[in-house]
Length: 74
Image (cartoon, rainbow, N blue to C red; front, side, top):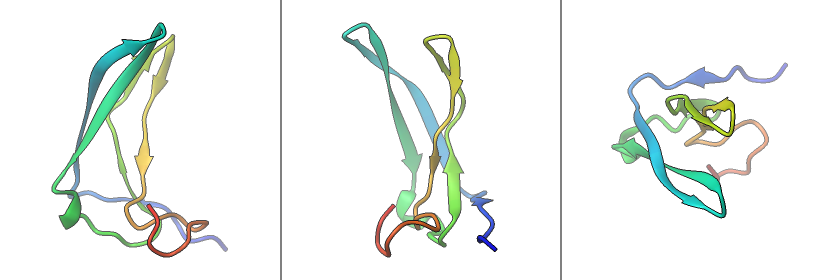
């Protein structure tokens, strides 16, 4: 059985438009106090939803990696 993925609650993540490159939107995300976030494997932080090219997007960032990552990888 695969380990459960769990959202890390003490993380503050912001995301906003950055620029347009070759007709495509680019975004910048920021995780405040990243070094203080729990880095347990399968724990993730989630960015706010952004809309781009007719779709809604969100990123899941795994500070300790997910089940398929080697030790030390995010």
